[in-house]
Amino acid sequence: MQGGAGPRAGTSKGGVRELVWGYLESSGLAERPRPVHGRIPNFKGSHQACCSIKELDAFSRASVIKVDPDKPLEGVRLAALQARKTLLVPTPRLRSGLFNQIVPPSGATKEILRICATSQGIKEYSVPVGLDGKVRVDLVVVGSVAVSEKGWRIGKGEGYADMEYAMMVSMGAVKEETPVVTIVHDCQVLDIAEELLDDHDLTVDYILTPTRTIKTNCKRPKPQGIIWHKVSYEMLAKIPILKSLRYKEKQTGKDVTLQDEHPDLANASKSAALNEKAMPGNTRPQAAMGSAQMGQQLTKILLGETEDFEEKVNGAVCIS
Figure 1 (cartoon, rainbow, N blue to C red):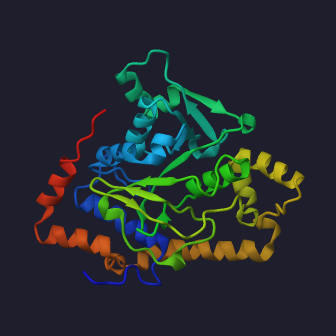
Figure 2: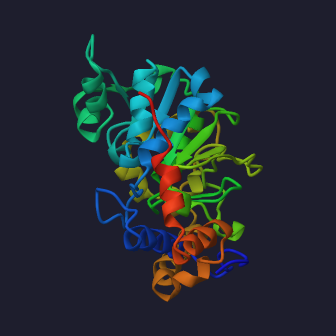
Figure 3: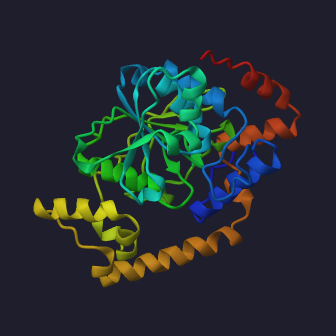
């Protein structure tokens, strides 16, 4: 398993996702909610990984932090609230806007702050942030299914993190230099073939794991805004805020022609979607096992060296 060249050219994003989800479950690293398939996976050591964000200058300097609502990012949301940062969380599937701000009650105890950081707290203590709120986000934290040390990221396949970032660019809420952080288990850091990436895919600047902090120095540009010719009528109907952003961008003279209005693009998109669905079943997990990070992790387990790894994880003390 060592010395491979990473995922082969024919491996799809779906194949990489299935590999990671299956490995987390079979190795006993997955945490609730289970199964992790189809999710941004929660994992053993996620809290330790989240605590590492306090050591980043980007976190210390940030006043406004956007953190996705996924379970493994709960520790980052708590750290932001404890540090009295403005915490923004995307609305579920972007159905009712882009952000909610988590606003703890006055005089909130540590326990209340912990609740505010959970999915329950997001529902109970959130206030919608409108498009005209002139939001400026200083730090973006996203979940991932897989990520490479180069900063290339694969999400769970629904495209919401990519779309959220593109919408923030459109709103002027983020700039090219706004840092993007992801939280993953060490086994989720693996080689990703560049040909799997598209121009709408979000890249990351920092990767936090239970044992490492990786600065990617990513050279690949982040999305420059909403790529309208990849947006369908169906997406426009599911995400109402897109309609408002499209109208605003149209007023400025930008080309906001949708995918369905480009017959060639629409047909190509359908073909790509069918290929993506077809690939995972035909892609053997071993195709991606050659990556340096996944190979090293699996080799440790096969050689019985997991105790040393677990000691590193358990030794990562977080002081709240």
